[in-house]
Length: 179
Image: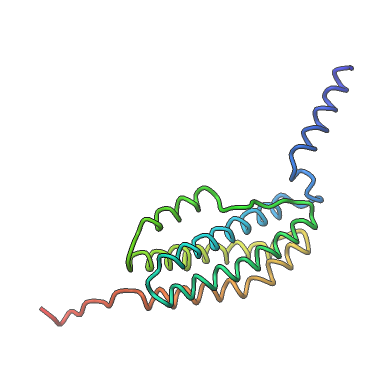
């Protein structure tokens, strides 16, 4: 074999084993969106499962169940879309997301409820809404764009519900009139 043939063979093997390299010509940005959206969904489901066990407030438990259910449906749809593009999305949350969940998992009583709602309800959904808004505007693949547009209203609704829940869990402010 010549040097050139070896180089070509190595390139072909590298492409075959890279998996996502054959993502049906998905733009890198579209692929990155699918990856982040999948990880976010897995994080929501995992943290929601944790909240179903640890949360004390029934409203927090109801919110967690809703997140588990709705993000599972979104995740299934994402997997179907990704498969149609010959892309395999991650099957779990990112290491950073797992670390954040571990931190709130160590909390107990009402501090868990407040931290879960703030971190996974408000902060995570603010980031997810931004992610989906960007994909809705800038995705190159029409199916990826349509997926983002379709799910953006539900994610905004999750964020609003989390903000309302956070407000109900916040401790009452101290009055300045009592001394």
